[in-house]
Length: 177
Image (cartoon, rainbow, N blue to C red; front, side, top):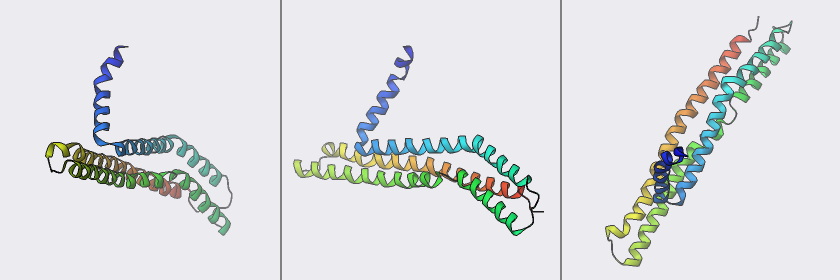
């Protein structure tokens, strides 16, 4: 029970931040959560499932008597492609999420600025106090979208390079000769 009281100030801070950024911030948050679930799934797969699949492909290749014929070459290409396709699965979806985060941030900017203009139209003045909530709704989603995209870019690049390295390693292990 004491744990709840320990995290309560942090949860209140997150709630205040989400309210300050507007509804678009919730969409960015859900998209970022989805993106990171995919990233974590890929990391877990590359640590465990991929190694088993690569070992199975290596076993299939080594159990063959023929490694030099055209058919053997085609089987080698197929094994490499199958293992690589599974290693690269969801990476394009992660990259799509990365691309959507800043776009949603810009959507938040536009909706926040619309709110600023509505306040200006209703009040008939450019009072900074009356425009403050709209300006925060304009800047916070942009920042959140950019931060989410930056974290996703780093991980998408890492996953892409890791899957490419694993493909090359498997191709080297499935030697012809």
